[in-house]
Length: 371
Image (cartoon, rainbow, N blue to C red; front, top):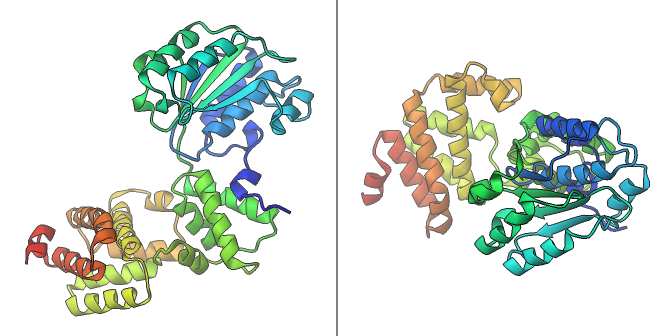
């Protein structure tokens, strides 16, 4: 049997299955239930957080023969057509490869035709910011006065590239990144359905690496499951797949910085390098650790943001009290800015040592490089 990626297998098919976008799904359900449906919608937000999925669910719901409170029933003939991708009334267009004015002129001709055995014809235009200026101009008139049977859903990750004339003709919905706790709960449901054994810490580690994207999180989960090869999924296994560094090692590194222990710091970097760790990933983790320390020191409810195990959070909280905010911001800037530099330098280890010793001793990184 062909393997189906987890993000495809667990793509939501109803509004209730969507996570982290309740402010949008509820509004759309209310519109469908009341019959006050707009003619053009704009879905904007980061990648992998549900824009296309919600567009498809909405397209299914507006033509559903017996929707339930605005959500598609999934059982009628109209719903089943869309699930099997046989619905000619829902047209998905990738604007990245169909971005010319001729493509939009062709679309304008097609929208005139009525839907077949349905109330609406729905056009989902993905990556709409990729359209050329002339294509936007061609689309504008159709968006302004579309036929009554047509609904446009424009999806984009870069809303700032859309002309104001297009924005003003759409009902806009801004999608949010999904929280770590929300992603961890989704992973729990997926792994339970797949009969995969896991540690709770492993779920949190995968969820954090997804950085708010459901699709990225499930793609990483696929890699972790393949690495585990039927064994229990652990945090250590997740960190190996990601190339990330355990919080315990981050704390140890920053302890050397606190003590101004140059010898210990150099030995530690040598140990990290000898394990074959990607130093570009390591320095990115250092920047994140500095950020986590700053959150512990500055925020009233830091663990609501960090979502860490209590033991790890306690260690981080204790270490954060040994730094002032200015120093932590400097560490974030130095290590965050060094990530790309480390990828291309001939000696990543030497550069990491130079930067680390410089910030530890209070030198500017530019002065340290000159010396």
